[in-house]
Image (cartoon, rainbow, N blue to C red; front, side):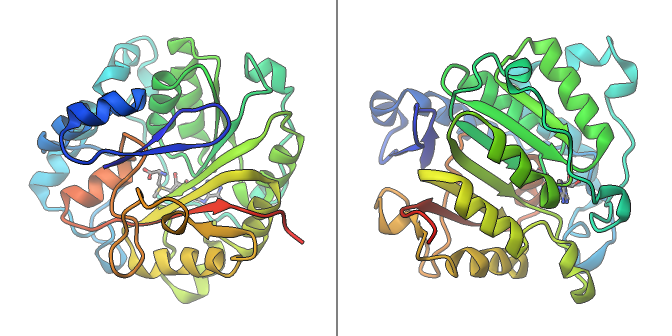
Length: 317
Ligand SMILES: C[S@@+](CC[C@H](N)C(=O)[O-])C[C@H]1O[C@@H](n2cnc3c(N)ncnc32)[C@H](O)[C@@H]1O
């Protein structure tokens, strides 16, 4: 199992061969790995996002019983955040009703967000930054911010405002000063945001983005040439991009776009043989120490997650 360590400058990947105990000795961050394993044994579930019966089984795979159990599984996997404690304080923010998808090309999402005063949103805005594009409920990023608090800032970009409001509410309740969520269309706001951030951009994650299956809707996908270009330019040397999807065609779409930048990026398995890939070049394990909610859903339904992790090796020409 690979787990990205929360190190200062870059992402330390440590390979846990053999027992979890020996792995724990080599990386403080692998302390979370055995917990993850235990969590995976708890086959209960959640999410407010998937709906039954949509295109290609992306959301159709769920059986009724899995659907019923899904909220519990996410609660179990994210139990150490204790977010349930806060539902009572803000009843409207617990199980919220949200739109399944929005159209990022609609004119209401065309304007870039206002740049925050970074020292007002992060205690130390000079720290290395991780940006999670399409942060969904925010639990994944909050979990990272809480468990790797001291050396990195975390910025979640999400186009559905209600999710952002709830994520930000949780951040404040948890008293975390290293994480911030923004209601933003990443396609138009990523560049202005990261270009003004005072510290180095070290990791961009795009995890299980909306697939927009129909060909004529592919232009709604978040990974577009302009975003790839911006990530290539703005990442620091040694910084990484982590993309994954349970939809093979979408995973290939993202992969093809980053593979095309091989003058800037190398895939991690060519740099660090601790990253295990299958014969097709997909990274076998989630290196973060925690699964995203969509990932939990997909795996519960028996789907496979296709991952690529690129590291910036050279500046763009
Ligand atoms: C399928 S969900 C995955 C959420 C989370 N990353 C996970 O793996 O559980 C994709 C998320 O991306 C958001 N999203 C889609 N297009 C976006 C855009 N252009 N900018 C920001 N967020 C976007 C959606 O609202 C949704 O919450």
